[in-house]
Length: 449
Ligand code: AMP
Ligand code: ZN
Image 1 (tube, rainbow, N blue to C red):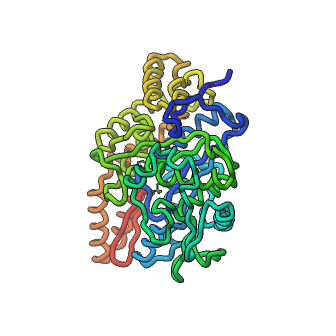
Image 2 (image 1 turned 90 degrees about the horizontal axis):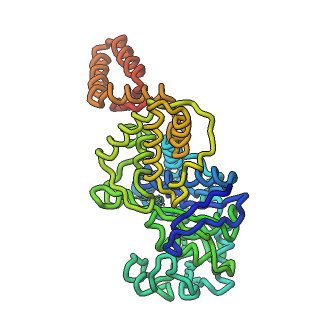
Image 3 (image 1 turned 90 degrees about the vertical axis):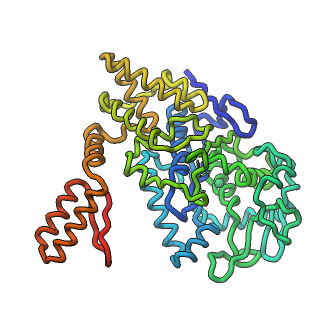
């Protein structure tokens, strides 16, 4: 039996039946992080939504090629490097490591391919050259711009005409552009900024280019699904479409565009510029990866999701309750019981179904218990066993930050009094509780083991 998956396509703004180009190999691209600062819970939503879609697609079709890029060349990275006087590579590598750790703590599977922008500069230069040759782009003083009026469908994804786009967006004004809406494909780099040689001098690519180049390289000129957060529709995705369609003389780039809504705090978008972010690692430390994951899936992906303690406490109670029926089960295709997920990845509907299965299972229905466990796993839950969950809870409730700081203070006093035995004992006691301490030059810091 074939399963019918429906998805809301941002291109048409309609819920559509998903028809893959090749049902033996689904192709999906999702825009990954710009690695300049610790990822936050808003970024986590994109990760978890597309990870859940990836799991569902694999269950339906078997083989899925999922590409998620790493943006490691960007003006924000350059800015931070100057501000903190840190080497760019050091920043991008450190943040990438944190990002991978965050993905693992949220139980997001690694994508099939995770290309880095800086490994694909050659492809970006080639695409820019080709767009100039085909008369879709022009050079001016070391800059190359894409001429948006050359693409008849510009604005189709964001459903706006050029005037609306112009007034609604922050456009980089430059007298070098023929049209203020034209966007950068390539720009010059000063001596101290990262740069690569190109026919237009030493420079670096504009942000949009990398996704066009990398998606084509790994998925082809036309592929199934392209995703990201709502804020990427314009200009990022609109520009990706313009570049790729013009360069390949195609009307289509990705067939289905999926966008997740924002995580908000007090109804305001969580973002670094607003300064209201909660990092993934802090949220996970406080509530566990599974609780954060379930919270992120508790609203439909297309809707906003307000982040607050009440939401998290509710999800924690749910996960805790569900662990009472945790069981190691053989993984099993449960699509017959996943109507809600097949209907536009309706995770709140699926969570309601899991509650139903839980209720039946708790009355002793063994079939429901197996289904319940498999349903949790399809959502990416139950990645740690019951013992590990109980341990996490113990650690989480038994040990408060205040207690840790008090112990660190006592150890400091012991060391000052040359009572090193006591100091070691305190270190060990904390370690037994899962807390690692480290002495820096002028202070002692701690982290979870
Ligand atoms: P960035 O690292 O800022 O390029 O963002 C990486 C991904 O996270 C993109 O797909 C963004 O659309 C998404 N994103 C950023 N902030 C939020 C938010 N508050 N809620 C949901 N998604 C977000
Ligand atoms: Zn992108």
